[in-house]
Image 1 (cartoon, rainbow, N blue to C red):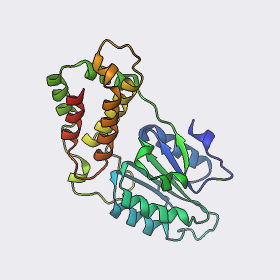
Image 2 (cartoon, rainbow, N blue to C red):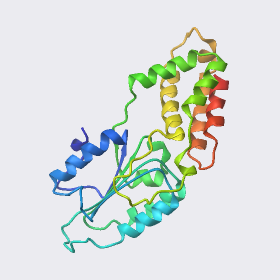
Image 3 (cartoon, rainbow, N blue to C red):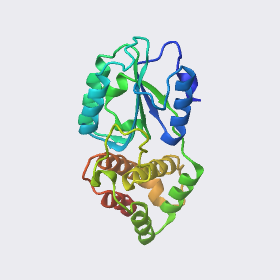
Image 4 (cartoon, rainbow, N blue to C red):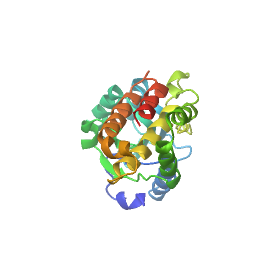
Length: 249
């Protein structure tokens, strides 16, 4: 499915791909192999995976992107892949400077679960591809959550966000190849769950047996948008933010 968006003869300098990175990366690697770009032991291939892409990641990324090809062959493609659940705004501004002056045969692929994390300036300078989909299990869980009483919802949130976010741990070397995005971090799971909740609430048709979903739907959706923005800010409390959704419901 991904390959239909990628032109082998005329690759865009920067792609933004929205979806599950575990589904996207194998498809992208397969495409790169077809155009003779090695994804193993290739010094001109970078696969960077972190939970939150921060300023230090962006600076290291910029330094690597500004280097010349190891082969010294002008026809050699340099590929940079960044997979992250969140991209901080200051880091995005650094990426923007790279994208504004694209180099020949240098191509960037940003992979994220949700494009809304990006600034409009990044969106305007990348070729956007959406492979995003909601699984039936996630939708079912969100539907059950809405029908729970407050006590049960708070207990569900407690279990959902159990553990530590990656930003609280020592930060990995952003250029280590093979490092996987922590898709199970509390913050990542919370953002994914919010998307499923939004689908359920937005698709609810009136009249609905639960008056809260019928009369207060807009208020809940606004709170989901607000919580999503705060979750993308470092240092915010995932548990407290998600509890606000549980209480409002």
